[in-house]
Length: 564
Ligand SMILES: O=C(O)c1cc(C(=O)O)c2c(n1)C(=O)C(=O)c1cc(C(=O)O)[nH]c1-2
Ligand SMILES: [Ca+2]
Image 1 (spheres, helix red, strand yellow):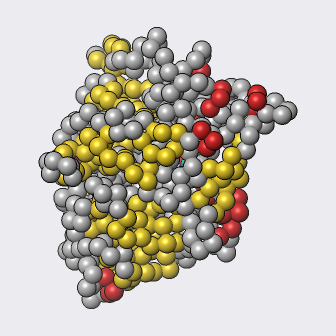
Image 2: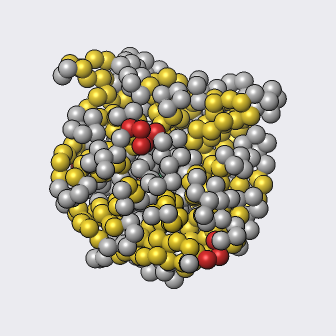
Image 3: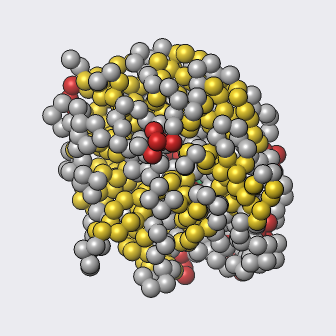
């Protein structure tokens, strides 16, 4: 059965399949199924498990998609598996041939595939897009997204918005320039492209003709000199799409280099939410979460559409929520970007004291910015500052969930800090472009990770569940009143959505850094999660990663259903 635009638009409401990243392109990760609930969840048992095998057992961040009784799941090293969703029997496997010399910053991960027509489409670490026939696994088309030798890579799951395949790009640590592309999903042909660094021109294509779609090369007012040419703002965690406004919401990463003294100005559109018209590729609005970012506070976190009841007027507004890597939770009007509410979702923030609601800009704490090496004693190292959150963020790639039933966001947060300092650096193709050094540190002995249920109107943390190691997997919430999430310690947990009380857990044998999903297979509600420890924490976390140094790496899909 082909996947249609209607299937995708209806994904959040149709329990029989999961045909988009986010369980609906708005990204709420809310399943309408109720069979598994507070009463029955204790009877949840494994239905099947399938191993990705081989020696390629690195971080597994993939969200499976399921349609017509088949599951499609990507795995580390740019592999994709098709599996019988009922039994776990492998149907076929695609292994992309990765060249030597790829430069992913943060492990050999992938976050998932998109479904459209009879195709399954995913992005590879060497910055290509591959579309496979979903029945045979044969390549139907391939397109290049960027030059891997210049540091481009791709890790995000594509989505389909009104018949267009929407993709992001990685490479912010190498001075790659972020952008969102829209393509014909059946052919891979480019429809429009929208760079996310001011100064770069966007284009759309009509009958083979190239037509400009905004932000000319002369409006790079928020950058000095030629810095915009290698400005970062990678769209490395993909995008969400809201059919109500016909807008694509892309979070953008750090400006390059990290050392902010080398690039005066706001450095648009880095560390922002950028809303893009799905038809034209024009920027409808932008909101910069961290102007002039100096901490690698990539603002790539997902912007999740929801109905927001304004506490002052009682009016229901079309809004979006974003738990930013910088430690603040943002509620923006999704029709125009206006800041409606903002509050911290982690306990310690050292770089800003809050936001000015009129201007939407942060109130910086000046001492929180790492110093200028030019002002340092030897001219090679700037003043070291203590910063919270750490650059790995109050939240990172792990996707939150929103329940329209409880009105709460479920945020997989982390409480940690870093010592950070700046160093001189200049751009060199294919070389790391940071100009900074760091050491990550825990803030508390008993936990780094903390799953928080957050009320977007009051900013109140309604409940929280602490976790010893950093949380790095996404969250699922269900109409059965549950929240599911995985931990690096290997547990998949089911907790009460109203109280956080743990009702069920299962040890999967390796760390979980991926978001669970739910669907109904032949009348039975299933929960699936990809397992396999990895991602940025073991690579960059230093001492913090030792909190789970007993773990074996892995690579499997686990599926659960109720015992009868
Ligand atoms: O700026 C970028 O292009 C970029 C890309 C990625 C990526 O593609 O995974 C990460 C980051 N930055 C990053 O800063 C980061 O902390 C990070 C963590 C992870 C992960 O999957 O565990 N990816 C990335
Ligand atoms: Ca980054």
